[in-house]
Amino acid sequence: MSGQQPDRGSSSQVFQPLGGDDPTTIAGYRLAAKLGAGGMGKVYLSYTPGGRPVAIKVIRPEFGEDPEFRRRFAQEVQSAQRVQGLFTAPVIDADTDGAQPWLATAYVPGPSLADAVVAHGALPVEAVLLLIAGMAEALHVIHGAGIVHRDLKPSNVLLAADGPRVIDFGIAYAADATSLTGSGVTIGTPSFMAPEQAAGKRVTPATDIFALGQVAAYAATGSPAFGEGTSHGVLYRIVHEEPDLSGVPERLMELVSRCLAKDPDARPSVTEVIGLCQSANAETVLRRPEDWLPGAVAADITVRAAAPAPVQTPPPPSSAPAAAYSPTTPVGYSPTAPVAPATPPPGFGPSAPHQPPVQPPHAYAYAPTQLPTHQPQTYPGHPAPAKPPAKRGPLVALAAALIFGIAGGATVYGLLKDDGKQTQGGGASQGKETNNGGEAAADPKPESKPAPKPAVYKGINLTAGYHLTLGDDDLRPQQGEDGGYELSYDTGGYLDEETWEGSLAVLDAGKEGSLAACRAETRYVVSAYVNKLSKGRQLCVTTGTGHMALVTVQGITVEGSPSDDYLTLDVTVWRNAASSD
Image 1 (cartoon, rainbow, N blue to C red):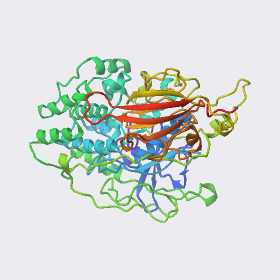
Image 2: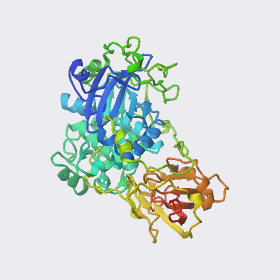
Image 3: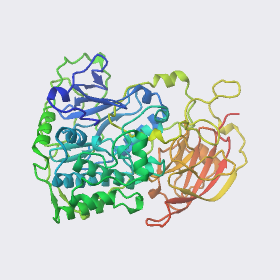
Image 4: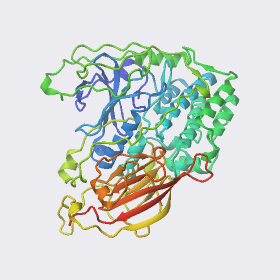
């Protein structure tokens, strides 16, 4: 189910009236209709003050209660705000810390690929080539922001009049971080996973290329390449068997078969995918006509373009939160469709001094040399207290229960992931810790403790997809990049500390690291991107289990290395240095 367009048919089916359990406002946005519901919550239609329709996704209570999900979700929203491509739905507003976490993206007036194929059958070859070329360009900017989609499937691809839109990128990562996916909560479908994903191994941008090949086969034949049935059966075939490509047109065979290589290193790059689309089209440049989709699918776009304006009487100011509309998209982002949105009556949408301007649609031409270059943001930081925050009590955790909807969001990663997400160095990755008396531990006062004896580890090679648990006497890399780990090298290209109430800080270049320096450093970051680090750069890690460490980068593998990406680190650990007396 798509996050924005779950239904087919008439306007009344697409834009469902609000029910008794639906909110009427979200942070000052007046809701006009319900667009759908899925494994992670509900999606609503609203408007910016200038009349631009937006899709607002509100989290389910189960996910909102999970502090690790909240942390991951905030991190992924921050990354997603850097994705500004022609074939993605831009994130224009969000609140990840408030009483009701939510995410607002530009509304795309078009059916999902899944809905279009179910309603009208497989797409013609020319439409599939334009679809995959547009999706590849979307992946280029998504990967350039340091994000692996992880859940690229037909319901996460919307078909607009001027091309496809890839949505919900990075959201699967946040869902996978919560214990819910390992305890019976099923998100999405495994039919479009890659073999390494199904086997619980390292996830890379090549994982999205495999999913792209599956989407191409589905669009061209109307059926998944590895069939349907039980989750375990489909996952087994993805890992151990070859796809059924008997119905794939000959012109698409090379594109699909190369993307579906079991070995990630054998799959084509994004640029090569676009080149394969050009070759299959027998053209040097792919050009997208206005009628790139079959007429029946285009008619569905017309239905969804008639977005209804809110009809409720605006509530008095006291009945809705006073929240200013603060768009996060840079000036000049591209509109999602050339159709003029309905203008809401006065009082709908949060009050604001401005809205993002709308640009006219462009004619798109695809060529590998035309792909823009995107760099991840350096150390996306966030405000933090001068010392590690106090432990949160159960009432605070209970107050974090909310609603959020990312319909059709993540796949069933919980099928093959560990249920318990705890550190191996002592202490759970989430929740409140207690002392021997069962009472909540007091705020750490590291300044009052004598400096503990340091443990020094030289030349640790930390491979992407692995982590370190600082409480281990034998400090060795262990497989896994999320789940409450104390220092992990994420395959997205960054280091992070994931234990509840842990922190990570990057020291200024040339600053001499020490226990005192790490205790004094408060400029915490969410993640430290490896491409912004250099030999000799030092990081301070404080874990939720009370350990502190100084990490010195001694080496970084260069692009094209025959071995996996890894960092060579010197690590000095002061155990229990952040604990109270």
